[in-house]
Structures are given as C-alpha cells and as structure tokens.
Image (tube, rainbow, N blue to C red):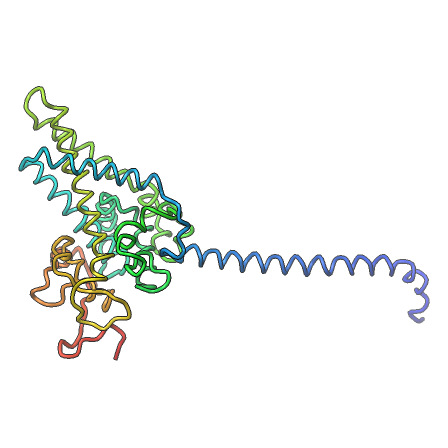
Amino acid sequence: MTPTLLAPEVTETTPTAARAVSVAAPDKNQAIAAARKAAADAALKLKQDLRMGRAYDDGRINWITTVVMGLFHVGAIAALFCFSWVHLAVFCVMYFFAINVGIGMCYHRLLTHRGYKTPRWLEYFITACGTMALEGGPIFWVATHRVHHQNSDHDGDPHTPNDGTWWAHAGWIMTGRAMHSETALLCRYAPDLTRDRVHVWLSKYHYVPLVVTGLLQIALGAWLAPAGHALLGGLTMVLWGTFLRVTVGLHATWLVNSATHMFGTRRFETKDDSRNSWWVALLTGGEGWHNNHHAHPVSARHGLTWYEFDINYYGIWVMEKLGLAKKVQIAKFDPADPKPAGVL
C-alpha cells in the first residue's frame, strides 16, 4: 500500500485547507504581534505615568486640590484674629501628631525608607496621624517620595527646584494628574503598602481622620466657650486646630522640597542638590537635615551631630526604649571624610 491511494481525496480538500492555513497563520501572527504591542504600550504608559515633574505635567489645574488649599489658607488667616492660649495649645498638640509623628516619623522614616520597625497596630495609628496633615494617603506620599529619591534633581523628580522655586514648593501638587486614589498605578513604587488592606483603606479615605479630629475640636471649643458663645468657640477652635495647623504644616513640608534643595550646607557630596537647613529642621522636627538624609536615606536619624536638632528621631529613640521600635537604622560615616552610603 502506498500513499498515492489517498491522492484523490487529499487533492479535493487541500486547496480549502491551504486557504484556511494561509488565513489562520497571518491572523495568529497578527494577534501575537498586537498582544506584544499592547503589552509594550502598557509598560511604556506605566513608566510615563510614574515619571513625575514639570516636563511630564499636562498643564491642567487640579481644581479640587487648589480650592481646598485656598480655603485652608483663608481659614488660617482668619485664625490669626482669634488667638487664645488654649487655641495655641491645641495647635501645638495637633501639629506634633500630624507633622512630627505622622509625616516625619511615620510617612517618611518608617513607611518610605523603613528605617525602623514597629508593631503593626502602632504603624497604623501613626499612619492615621499622618493623614491629618492633608498631604494625601500613605501610598501616594510614599510612592511620590520614592520617585523623588530615584530621580532627585534630575528628569522625573516630582518637585525639583530646577523646574522653578514655586513649582518645587507647591505648584507640583496643584497641577497635573491627581493620583491620590490610584493604588494600582502607584503599586510599582509602594508594593509593600498596596498589599496591606489597612494602608489601602487609609489611602482611599485619607480625609476621614482629619474630619473626625476637626469635629472633635469643634465640640471641645463649644464646651470650653462661655455661655451663649458655643458656636463661636467651636469655630475658632477648629480654625486653629485644623485650618492654621494644616496650612503651617503644609508649608513646612513643602520647604523640605524647595528650600533644602536650594539653601544650606552640604556635608556629603550627593548626586543631587540637597542641603542641610537648620531653620527648616526646626519647623519640621529634623527633616531639614536633607543632605544628611539623601546621603543616608535609610537612617532613622537625620541630625547626625549633637547640634543638629532632630525631634523626630528623639521620638523614635523613645519608642525604641519602650520596646515599640526595633531595628532602628543609624547612619555611620567618617566625620573626617564623610561619604554617602554605598560610596567607598
């Protein structure tokens, strides 16, 4: 028996089969090519989306952010006309928990750089303190700051003074694309937080702790006010405890982005323009020792000498002594020949 016995049958079907194969093969190849192109485009889009800075800004104004910031500044000015020592005390307590504990100790040194470790319940509590600064949720803040360190004062830095002083200070947060709730987009730079349901919730509803504490301030002000002045007492209390406190805290944090990349001294020869600024350190509890920080980003201590005031590190030190902080990282360097981490 030879294959030629089946020749007639094969001859009848071969043209159809050949046409099917000739059509299917290009279709399959086109589908593969299209899938590859879509994957490449998605990867490029993700990379471009996370390239921050003025060159990647689309020029739009974030009206919600801008209006809210404007209202807080109006409230801050109004607060100056109703001073009292009680109001000042509430301002100081709220500022400490929001800026020193929340932003400096938690958002920055714990969540972003993992300079130390705490029990999970404490991490969540001080993260909630950070949301009261009105600087966004933890995922947005951490991802943005990690991008800043990756591209500091180079292409893609979210807030370098090379794009303008005002841009570095506040312009970058009021224009372009708002990403506060875009957890999937920010996942690349904060995967440790996007896997945590509590941090995801705090990022999505970052305004809740601020609203709750604001209502508590109104209640406290009304309770302390003289008879018949409960409404005024509540209003003036929230103007100091929330509006003025948030506004001062925002500008203090923004000065780290702008002033400490323009003015001050440099102990370490880093690849950016970071500076040590004593007056920004006073306003932020130690965040102004920015050149020290960029040279040794994982260090939980930014003030590296006895005269460099660093209240945020002192708070971490107290937590360590109480057993609430472990594996606290401290920068080590030769004072006679100071070099950034990783430089021999």
